[in-house]
Image (cartoon, rainbow, N blue to C red; front, side):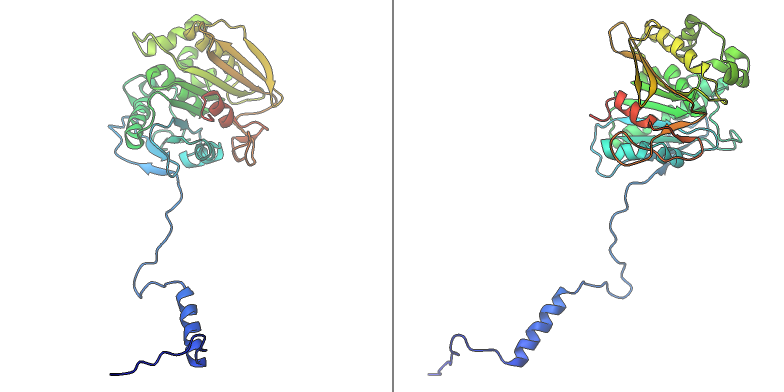
Length: 341
């Protein structure tokens, strides 16, 4: 029989074996490098503003962009944000604070973009009847973007909101009037009421002097945009600088008259207070819910109010037509729409 020799317990390893074990441990701690020619693994790219093509007939020849936070679940709200003249979709979505709030609160954005072939200043054509009537032009293109986006991200079709600055604010009025069933609420920033250019006979007269209509006439413009529609109508929030020399503040007054009439509300505010030091008014509809809300940004010129900084009520980045006013319009709109809940 063969004897098997077992070393006694506690016997020390040889220096050579100890060194080999130490080298093996060090080698296993090193990162694994890809083989020559193999692609290195990269982390997934963060959410970004991305273009979408093939979203419908696109009669207005617009471009569609969107922002969807990583991991956004189905059934979340959607905000359509329309840039102002000389701006673009990504710059407005980011600079206004909307992409930041989408990450913070969990919703997605549709960001239409004008083409200079349609308008040399990249303004949405809010003053052209062909682009503002239901079923055609730029208004129909935006509606098609909403339909495509809701299908792609399984968004909540009952919680779609629309907002915009200047020409984008005027196009917001168009979408609320021509497609009221698509939007729960809208936010017009330094914009104009629906049908203003036609009422004034010129977009320039409308911008500088207003449309010159009374409340009932303004309301009739909206009702004529969607014949036979009985409601519900989108609620409206307006933010406008009192020193705006591009779109006169009278347009905020005209918007109040137009949409209080549409909602059957009177023009005596039910709430009259201040927010961040600025006059804030709320006009309630017959059922007691806010129908129209306004912020008069005292001393501010033409642009979108932002409040750069981190967290709380702060959002946005100051830049051309994005004005540091100590109040972020996107935050106030999102809060009014319950996006922060």
